[in-house]
Structures are given as structure tokens and as C-alpha cells.
Picture 1 (tube, rainbow, N blue to C red):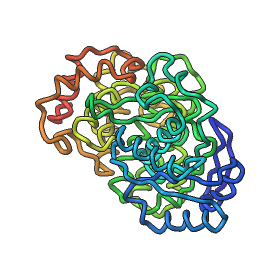
Picture 2: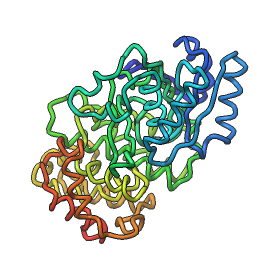
Picture 3: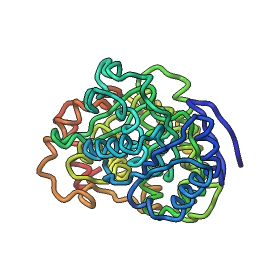
Length: 383
């Protein structure tokens, strides 16, 4: 299965298409790319092969992989230094969410005089960057979760303020994307499950958002169907290329759909991830049913319509039970205490969630006390 799409950017789908990377660099007039990736990928055969093919094509490629699982501003600044010293003229961001987000952030700030935090997604901050100085970016995901390869933002930890900040600029959207399912085949079952649930959270929160955007809603509902059909198979049969293809596409669909907005899952996952350095996808996976119940009053009719499309009984409870059943099937924890060491800061988490940008498009504008209560229920496993 191979396809070329141009929504929301140039997207090339199909097994083995990472081999087109050198030609794609030439098309984008990149002669000296900086490959930004997760540290766990840097020495793997797939990355070694990518670097070798670029070098054989005459590209002066460099590598930067000093990135945390929740990338920080310090990581981005270190990458910018490598970019400048190496006289690079473009970024290839390869990896999961951390490699993709860090690569995009490095590219957007590499040639600017403003700081990374000047571009936090507040008002028109993005105008502080000189768009003409942002080099081309190529996005190549190796997980089917974040969809960052088709996004205009990066989530970066501001360590001084102990929070995750959303860095935004329209030109952070990669110029081209390669969705090669073969790059996800080696992902362990646990990470396949957590990242797949992250993709579900993006599609689901976009679907539940009150923002008027029928195109995004349509993408989200089909993305959820693909995940329902193919995530269990991708977890159980990691080498199944059909399942891996459909999941990497559903991941990109989620990030395309959340132009409509996200919600309380992400509003809580962002501060929880910033404070406890926990895996973002697993946080969303655990929080999902608790947030669905907290939003019941505003979403139950919409969820019933979604359940009908998914060939479930057309009601909220049927959908919630499917979420719980699939989580159990693929090995997702039921409570935050499985990955968070203690619960003493949940009131603080609630206060941070209220002001998180994702909270603004949740179907209900919860207050800090309610957010803390959702987190506490999730911590204790009390649905």
C-alpha cells in the first residue's frame, strides 16, 4: 500500500519509503541536514542506514540525539548550537514525539534572534519569528502516536517554570512527511499500546471539542475507527504491516484533527508529564475514561453517535466499556499510581491544568478543584 497525499502537507505513505529521504532533501534544497532523533534510536540499524544513504547521496548530514523523553528547552538550545556549528540548512526529525517535537523546535529557533519561549503559543507570539529564516523540516515518525509530523507546534518542557509549553509557528509544519510503517515494526508491544492510545486521545478529544470544524470532526471519527480495528493487532502482531500502516496513518489523522482542539486529557497530561517525567501517551491512556466521565453531561449524545459509527451499541456506556476493554486487552494501566510515585501535588496539577491551552477546548471548562479531583480519581483507580 502506497499513497501520496497533500493534506495538511506533503505526505508519502508506504513501506520502504524512508529510502526516498535523500531525494526529498534535494527537492527541498537541503544539502546539509541535521538529523534530530531520540537517543534510543540513534545507534539502531534503521538510523545507521538512513545516515548512510544520505551520505552516499552527497549530503553533509549531522546527528543530534541528546533529548529527554519529554524534551526540554535546554535540549532544544543544545540542538540549535549543533545546528549552527555544523552550518546545517534543514532538519530531518525522526522518532517518536520527543524527536519530532525537538527537531521542529530546533528548526524554528535556529536562525532567530528571539528565544524559544518568545514563541509560546499565546496570542500572536509566533510573529516574533522571521518566517523566512525557518529552514525546511522533514518529519519521519517511528511511532504511531503523537502525530507531531503533521503539526505546527512542539511541546517543550520549560524547566525553570516546571511546565510544558506549546511552541507554535505555522512553518513548524514539516514541508514533507514520510509515513513508513516499517520504521514502527520494532516498537515493543507496551510502547505500541501507549502510543496508539495517544493517537486515540488526539482523535477523541478533537471529536469531542465544541469548536466548529466539520472537516476535522470527520477525520477524527475515521481515525478512531482505524484505531479500534488495528491497534490490538499492532500490539499483538508487531510485524503486521497492514496494522502498522493503518496505525501510523491514524496517528497523523489525530494530529490533523486536533486543529479543532484537545481537552482535559491533555490539560492534565501536560503538567503530570512536566512534573513527573512520565510517558505522555500512557498518561493520556490512563486518564481517558476518567475524563470521559467528567465530560459526560456535554458529550454523551455525541459519543452515542460515535459508538454507532464504531458498530457498538449507540450509547455512552457502550463506548466507555469498549475503551476499558481495549485498555485491558493491550496492557494499559488502570490507575496513575502505576506510573506516578505519589499524589501530593495533584492540587497543583489541577491549577496547572486550568491554564493549559488544551483546557480551553474541553467540552466543559472545569475548575482547578475538578481537575484535581479527576487526577485523584485516576491516581486511585476510582472510575
